[in-house]
Image 1 (tube, rainbow, N blue to C red):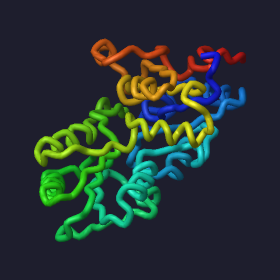
Image 2: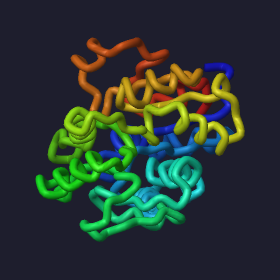
Image 3: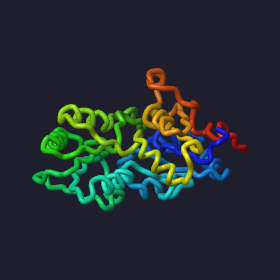
Image 4: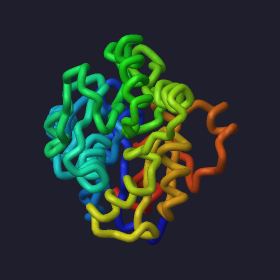
Length: 262
């Protein structure tokens, strides 16, 4: 970890669970920032905007601003602007993220066949009628863009099903392949590194999802650190496609791993 000059940090399951700080997380982030290491909070959270996330974390004691946060919706907006300029898009997502989708033409009329079907995070909105409508739109030629493939996440009520299961189902049913814009895409990590102005070998990624956070970051050349909090499960760790560079019990242990003094 001697070469690390910046830290990428997942939020849900690493800093918080159900937006409540995990033990020692606030102090650990403060130590990292006091040491002069730039940080980016990189998250597949699709239920809130960057500004809303920043307010919630700040109220919980974390020293962060909206500029420190890179979300899957923000990266999705950039992807759509670059690859589908002017496209008509439908959005299936749980939570209002339109503020982070500036410049994206969203169409709510079910009678209009969009150019792109965009899937965010799962929730009650992912009912049969909505998924079947998206299936029909894909059959009629719409492209599929998904913000992530997360199968589940941890809340204070336990593990909850996420949209990755529905992405896979729509791909199989419509015989198409989704473009993934959030983690684990290499483009997402590239955007985070560019935001911090560091190379991959100078950065570390801390996450609770061994595949999406840690191993994906390692494939991009970033040092991966897995925490045993959030969605971490020993059986998932054992069955993973690779091994993290480092494993720690929680984010509270990161300053020591980085060699930071009290």
